[in-house]
Structure formats: C-alpha cells, structure tokens
Amino acid sequence: MNCEDVQGGEIGEKYIAGQLGDADAEAFEAHYFECAKCFEDLQTLQALTAVLQRRGKTAHRFPAAKWLAAAMVLAVLGATWWVRHSGSLRKAERAARAESPVPVAGKRAAELALLARVDPPRYIAPVLRGDGQERFREAMRQYSVGDFGAAAAGLAAVAEKDPQNSAAQFYLGVCYLMEGHDAEAMERLRKTIALGDSPELAYAHLFLAKALLRGNDAAGAELEVRQAIALDGEQKPEAQRLLERLDALRSGR
Image 1 (cartoon, rainbow, N blue to C red):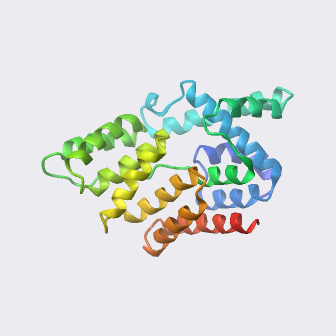
Image 2: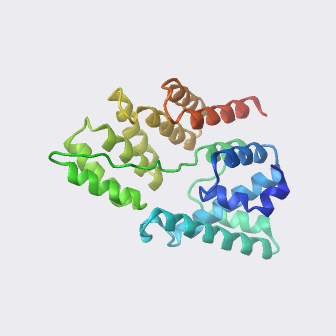
C-alpha cells in the first residue's frame, strides 16, 4: 500500500470507521508507521472524529451498529473535506487536538494510541435460561446496537448479583472501554481473567492490552498480548499482529 492508494481509497476514513478487512488494515498499519504524512493525516482524522462525536454524534443515537458506522464515515468525510479546503491543515489539527481530552505526547504515544483502537467484539446470543438471564439479554441487546452506556448499567447489575459471570464481567469491561472509562474497564477485564478458563478469557487479555496501551504501558500490554496468543483462540491472529507492531515500535522500526 502506498500514499496514492491511501488517498484515492479513503483508507484512513475506512480504517477509523472499522470498515477495512484484516488484510487491508494490516497493510495500512504497515504503511502509516513508515510514512510520516499518512500518519499525521490519520492523527488529524482521529482528532476531528473525536470532536464531532463529542458534539452529538454518539452511538446511542443510532438504532443499529451499522448506522453508527455509516454516521462515523460521514462525519469523517465531512471533517476531511473541511480540513483540506481550509488552507491550513496544521492549524485545524492543533485546534482539534486542543479539544481532545487525551493529549498526544510525541509520536510514540500517538502510535500507542492507534494500536489501542478498540472495535467491540460481536456478541452472538446463546440460549440462556434461568433467573437473571433476561437482564443480561437486555443489556446485550443494547450492546449490540452500540448503546454502551445503557448496556454497562445493565451488565453492572448482573455482575454485582453474580460476580462469577465471566460474560457479564468481560462485556462490562468492553463497554467501559468504549465509553472511555479505562480504569473501570481494566478492573472488569482483570476480574474476567481471574475467573480462569472461560469463553471470554483470551479476549479479556487482548482487550486489557488495549486498555494498557491507552495509558502508554506498552510493556504491560505486551505481556497481555502474549497471554492471549498462548491461549490459541480465534483472537490469535489479531493478537499476533498487535505483538508485531509492538515489537516494531520497541525496536524503532
């Protein structure tokens, strides 16, 4: 992938919106870590997207996850047009970053922030029976349409009543990550891990790594990624790609 592919295919916008396939996302990541211009453009898009989200384009306004993705693309495309026609890319970038609640401290921190990007895992509802399961199902219906705040409230109630419920602990951690509550997310993901073997265990390690990256703890994140890889689950390819990028970052490549 080269700069012409990125600009012509609106790759940055699709990457932020989670619309790239695994192969294209990996190729783009390999490119922007080597290309200062594309890396700066991606940072600008992320900052402007964050500003637009805080001005009302939040997940709970959309009836389904696909509408959230579509709205995100439209927001990013509109922001990109404004920046490219304003005659001052760097001025717009500084203004957007000034509104961002997470300051960017150097290129390394920005690279870690990009690696920490979270896409909520898809939830496929199993057949659940028994007391208390209806509340969990309702919370996960809200999760599935992108209403992470409402889902978190329901999952917190389930987890309080049944602390051994690994699914409630894990998805509550994911909801907190999506809402930007990183400390609470790490607490729930660590509780999931402490419960031992479960369908959510490997993903809990991977998402805990993402949360640690948000705090610039690359060493801690690497340990969690290696744990996720060792469990040899379906998340292994994603964890291996993340480990490769962390290795490249550490070695300065």
